[in-house]
Length: 307
Image: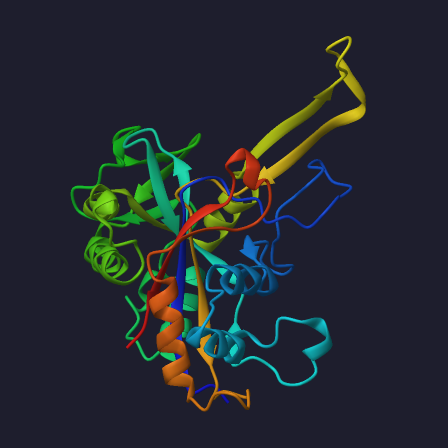
C-alpha cells in the first residue's frame, strides 16, 4: 500500500519518440498509445528506467536509491522490490497549429478528469471540475478572455486549428483561466527560462470536446522521414527509407509517483521520506525520454507536485 504520492509532469522541449517498434501501418515506427482511447502515452517501464538512471547515487544515498528502485544487479533482483510505483505518462496538453497565436495548447474533459483523479491520489485539489466542460460539442471550444487564439471565423470570432474552425463557448472562459492558473503553479517548470510560457499559457489554452482532441492527438503528431545513403553513389540504400512518429515539442504529459515503506533491510524509512528524497532529486531536472537521443529527441523537463 502506497504511503505517499505525487504528480509527475513532463514538459517536452523537443519532439519525443517513445516507440513501440516496427509496425505495419502507414508509419514504420509509431509512438506508444493507449489501445482504447488512442491517446499518446509513455509507458511506465520507460519512465521508471529514466528516473532510476538520473537519480543513481553513491555513498549514503546509495542505500536510499536501492530502497526506492530495487537492486541494481540481476542476481539480487529477487531479494526485494523497490518502494516506487510509477504510472504511464498520459497526454494532458497537446500543441496544435493555430491561425492566430501560432499554436494552441489543447486539452479535453477526459484528459482533465484523469488529471483530477491523479491529483486526488496525490492529496491535491484538482484544477477544475471537468464535468463543467461536458457541454462542449464537436466544433466548439473554450478559451480564456483575451485569448491570443481568437480569429475571424466567418461572421464571428472563433478559433481556427489546423484547417478546422471552432465556435466559442464563452460561458466557460473563467474556467479556462482557472485551469491555466493551476497549471502554472503545479505543472509548468518554474525556472526563469519558462517565465514567458507561464505568462502566456492562459492566452494559448484551448479546451476541446473529447472527440476533437482525440482526432488531433491521433493525426497531429510529427512524422519524420529517415534515409540511409550509399556512400559511393549518395542514393538511398535498399530498404533504408523509413518514417518515425513523435510527440511535438511543447506537449505536457502527466503521471503519478507513489512510494511504499522501504523493503530493503539496509534502510528503514517510510514512503513519505523516500518520496521526499526522490522529489528533491527530480523536480526541475532535464532528462531524456524515449529514443533518438543523439538527434535531439526526447528532452523533457520534470515537475513534481505534492502536498
